[in-house]
Length: 619
Image (cartoon, rainbow, N blue to C red; front, side, top):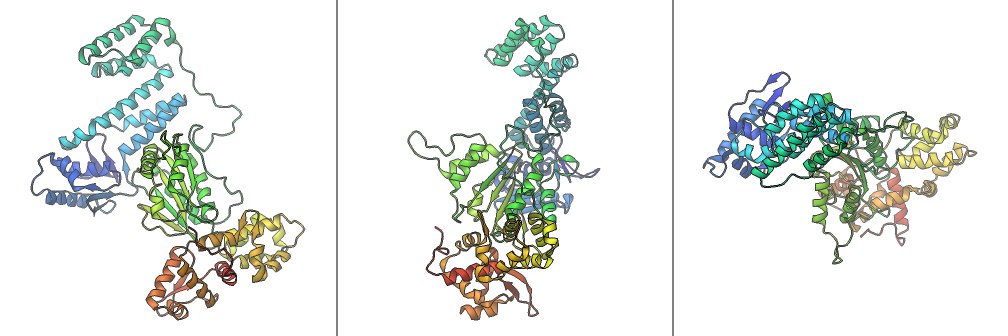
């Protein structure tokens, strides 16, 4: 479905124009589109439909207009009732205003970087989307509220396009266009300055000076002000002859073999390095990249899901996949690539104020996180306001790694849909608005062998296939464990793989072997377990006695000494935080659960050392 706001409000399905009648229906559609997927309250709809004098039956009439839109727009568009109003959801739809803003933003960036041909083309495409005065078939109340801002955006884009054309020495063809624009908008000083520039470069210096004097008289008569910087600087440049010099375009290094796929040099790039030997996860990688890629025909939509969540147990490779995806789609986010880790290494949750201050500094707010003159620090609400202001309208990719809960994440979500957000979390954050969840399970045997071989070397494992299979089995498909095992082999070229397999085979020493440098399976799983309340941790220690076989809630209830309902609720909480796997449904229709082999090993080790600190609950 395609929607048009930059002209008469319309909806099209392919070549077919959707038949909508009446300014009220068009107004409701326009208001919901302008909200960009947010809920529009009944009171706002009423004020934009009827102003200060709504009818007594306004709620019934609004409902009627929504019903008409549902009927005509079909199943591709959802119009849902969400208190205190309505919400329009149309995944994959295209909105001309959103595309205009994207092209204008890219054109502005190209102009600032003196890439004049590209800037002119982008801005010309943006302006071609206008099919006449915007919102021309809505109520006067909506037009009065929204039209000035839209028209100013159009005029600013037009002035930038003319600036690019002037830089490309197209002054001859610009004089007629600028003469008409100055006559239509006599107090827009930038247009008049551009007309003076074009006239001067055409050898018409006297006419350029006359245009200045006429503009000065108009400003004095209509507004009572003197010419501003644009006009006076241009006037001086005419007198000194400086307007004959064209601005120099940006010079690209001739030695560069290709253009960088990342943001412009002025945009922040905070991503961790990509993993060179990343292996597996093809289907999840493809899905995530597709959801972050442009809409068909290179058109952006305000309604594509921009909140992507990757969940799974600790060490399953959520961060590696997210970083891989972020690097793959970097070219789609010219305004920057932000990254923040939301937990400390010991598993404690980072303060939201500190994370926001870090992101704001990357976005160009150096004062974020610094004390005010009175010694006080900015409060969370003020940091959120600054963050959402800085991210509004910018094509950013924000990677939030290891989120604890919805409350922590809510402060870090941008307020608009221009920025995409990629979140990793052990918890399944179902309350994140507009999110698409990709759950990572431990790797199967084929993927495990491929990852181990990518790190340790194919030729090395090919001569010891049994040892390689043993190593992957004891790592139980956990990418962190496989990476540690592969790294240990790679750093010990004289070791046969069978030696490591033997050392890993003993459960009593396995956790000690699965540690190299900063990578440590036990420490990573400890950090996840420390997030459990103490009573639940005690129950988990008891549950470990069930062994490796899948079990149902009924058998867990007997072991834990709980009613079956309470036991099932506890097991579901463990599933939600990725400490327990659901393996399927048994013949009686009951869910079956299983503890991951390495989680079971870490819990058992902690139970045997009750005087140690590993399971002290984090503050």
